[in-house]
Image (tube, rainbow, N blue to C red):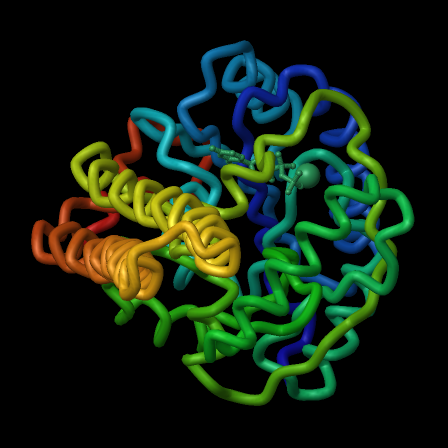
Length: 327
Ligand code: UDP
Ligand code: MG
């Protein structure tokens, strides 16, 4: 067991100028407390990742870093999405610490669960997943869509921890292995379990967002469920899926109409069954084409293998070595 492990807390931020002044105080207080209590090493850091924010988020991070040496920051050259921002933070932290804990910057991930995560790490867990014990603070709609999301993922054979988002502890050992995963379509909560090693869970109560608005409306959650981050060029394929669904619905209405007409005796013999089959198969084929298109689009993005993020600026990171996400 590592005595006083060096902990880096990775916090992605996108347009969070409303909430950051409130939560940053919580974070610094917590980490200072852990350092003073001797639970984590003195080189522990808070690493804020500015995900190409358009508001004053980066200025706030700069100020925090000036005022407090435990605060570090990196700023991405443009908005790359939560998963890429988190990955940028993890890549920055690899080999500079013994453990990382990733959490959202809006105060929804209960910071007190960090102690329990450290306990589990002390017991030998290399990965500790934060699991929401209740979602009573979420709206019914958010709760319903989020829970359906996990169920759908699991049904589709993706190994995810139920009700675990991206609040987790990862040891440097696991993180190093994880950097061998080079895919550009990121779904971290499904990828980390693939690394293996001993893991554990810690329950926490999901809090309300302290300020600002969610960046994950239903549409974004759906995109994430489809292994989300896609470029403009595969949108047409998505459109095909949409058209397929629409055609399937219309054909369903046609089917009912044709059946009714059949029983009313208004049809030429054979017409109803022909219409039913043609419409139904047409709809299904378009949906199938769209789904295959999704995969082709993913392959397209993977073959280009563009950098998953580009770091424009660093603040107070230990060694300012080159790291452009190409690992
Ligand atoms: N976030 C990010 N880039 C984005 C969108 C979100 O870095 O493009 C960050 C955001 O600042 C927050 C975290 O990801 O720290 C989770 O986002 P949010 O709280 O909006 O999602 P929710 O908790 O509602 O699912
Ligand atoms: Mg949130």
